[in-house]
Image (cartoon, rainbow, N blue to C red; front, side, top):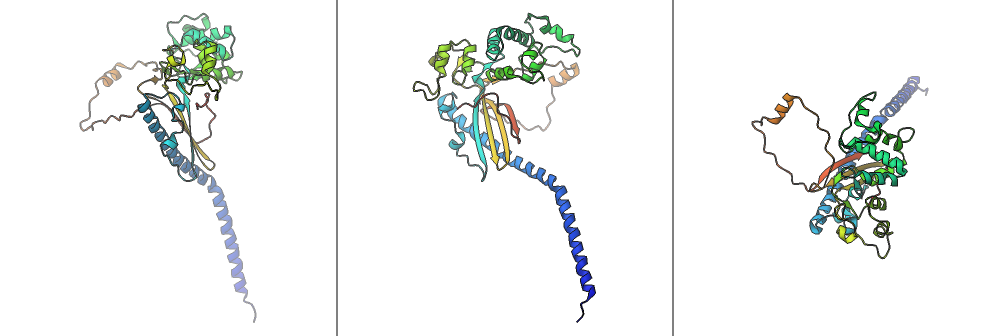
Length: 354
């Protein structure tokens, strides 16, 4: 029996068609791969974000229990160093969640700092005494309207005569980025490329931009204690190496630590909570700075004058006819700062407290 040539032709056509279809499918998958990857990463971010905020709420709940039981928060040695375990937090399958703390009130508060203390901190950060005094003077001229600087270049009128004139804010720094605009300070606290140098990094480790009444002696580094006037012998005693048999876990008052009450306290007033969530290669980082009972705040921005019509409109708002009654949420914490990112972030300028 002779083979049918038409049947062979059909097979060839089918194979060619399948080949073209496979090629088109491969091209389509290749072109859509970035979109699929972006969608997957967005979905991972949303899920990890939910995990991070759930861990934050669990952490805050545990901290509130200790606040009510002990009358305040002093240090993780108080017992809340592992809040997720205490709060029975169970992450999703395959998800790892970690929590660390950094006591912002273990630093010196810049808004209430004297020029002498500021100069000492700058000197301990790596500047010589003359340069530290000049930078402190320049910063005070920037932050305090009534301060008369020793150099004309840091006087408020000098900024008004700049190529792009501006006025000094007349209030404490709200961002360390402002240091780049302060005459004299910008030269000593930045490298040749304009990036923060080692001196500025050390300065940030010791100073907080937030306003609070007292530095927590339980978390204050030795340099901070020295800059605030604590003698070296007492600073060494307070900061003995971990494991020393004479080392106290934490103090419950400034008097118990032997330091001056007022400048120092023993309670945390602003606590940074760092939460890291991982699943495979995906990672999410959440950093929340919290306070309570108004213990800490960021200095208020400079008020901007409004037009008279705007002032009148804001002074007497007309209530809506069917406006629902507002319910005040009695949340025990105030979030001063909240930063989240799905990308790996560099470690903060302060070490986690343990």
